[in-house]
Amino acid sequence: MTIEKVGVVGAGQMGNGIAHVSALAGYTVMMTDISQDALDSAIALIDKNMTRQVSKGAISEDEKAAALARIACTTTLTDLGPCDLIIEAATERETVKQAIFDELLPHIHENTILASNTSSISITRLASRTDRPEKFIGFHFMNPVPIMQLVELIRGIATDDATFNACQEVVDRLGKTSATSEDFPAFIVNRILMPMINEAVYALYEGVGNVSSIDTSMKLGANHPMGPLELADFIGLDTCLAIMNVLHDGLADTKYRPCPLLTKYVEAGWLGRKTKRGFYDYRGETPVPTR
Ligand SMILES: CC(=O)CC(=O)SCCNC(=O)CCNC(=O)[C@H](O)C(C)(C)COP(=O)(O)OP(=O)(O)OC[C@H]1O[C@@H](n2cnc3c(N)ncnc32)[C@H](O)[C@@H]1OP(=O)(O)O
Ligand SMILES: NC(=O)C1=CN([C@@H]2O[C@H](COP(=O)(O)OP(=O)(O)OC[C@H]3O[C@@H](n4cnc5c(N)ncnc54)[C@H](OP(=O)(O)O)[C@@H]3O)[C@@H](O)[C@H]2O)C=CC1
Image (spheres, rainbow, N blue to C red):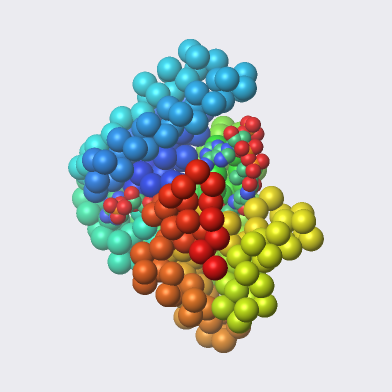
């Protein structure tokens, strides 16, 4: 099937990036969120990120203008009805995602492919609640979407070849590279990355190091572009905790126990960059460690 219209559900940090790269690749994009403010902020951020690409010569002014013109926004989920591929990128909570697919189903055409950008939740389980498990897939972008090369493609138990191949073509057209993961908790990237981040929080919790020493150690000692606590703030501590809970529940192994300090930050509403406070405080000119 040919994909021309892409729907994006959720206009947070991932949704805006998915809309950005899809529009630049020539797709018509309809982005939805429950919040008009989130949609307005997403469009402003896409504009800013594309302007940066223009200033670096990566795209032209005309390409930017054409891409922005291809993105429409709506707070009415069912406006995504005519889309060929719908990528859900809402909050990492299974009930939220299920409710979105439940509401969408009566309004989409029979060939529409449903995809979730979930970081960890079972694709097979999300798919099983829909009328089209064979046309359901995990389409997992990395953050920041315009920069990161990888998309993980996750087949649920019923995902058919036509769906997988159509999504592989989308990945190619976006100029990205796919890696295929089997459908097990948190797939490949987060199965490996998130326990490392959780361990960094344990190192902080147990006083092995403070925020600066832990991040400096991993940046300069392991050549990571960001320290694990800086990266956790960048991803969102709510998302990190949600992924650890999926690993812990799904694999029933205490090695995935979320660090109580991570839980405490989330309970405080200190979710990282998006709330301006996490392991660093972002309210001033430069980030200041909170421990
Ligand atoms: C949780 C999940 O489910 C899965 C995940 O996504 S896990 C997270 C995966 N992501 C990572 O691990 C990111 C690790 N960090 C990095 O790679 C780098 O720190 C970074 C690319 C984010 C920033 O790199 P940097 O060298 O520190 O900064 P900077 O030089 O300003 O930026 C590098 C490029 O990224 C762009 N960039 C930075 N932040 C950006 C953002 N939020 N959105 C879009 N573009 C961004 C910059 O414009 C710049 O572009 P060019 O290469 O075209 O010049
Ligand atoms: N952050 C990351 O690094 C990565 C995240 N992901 C995954 O992408 C998804 C989104 O994450 P991210 O962008 O970081 O999260 P954000 O919190 O930045 O954005 C989520 C957005 O979804 C909105 N939303 C919540 N419920 C609904 C709904 N019913 N309908 C439409 N929109 C809704 C939220 O609105 P409101 O704020 O009003 O609740 C918010 O604007 C998650 O599944 C996450 O696991 C995947 C790769 C990397």
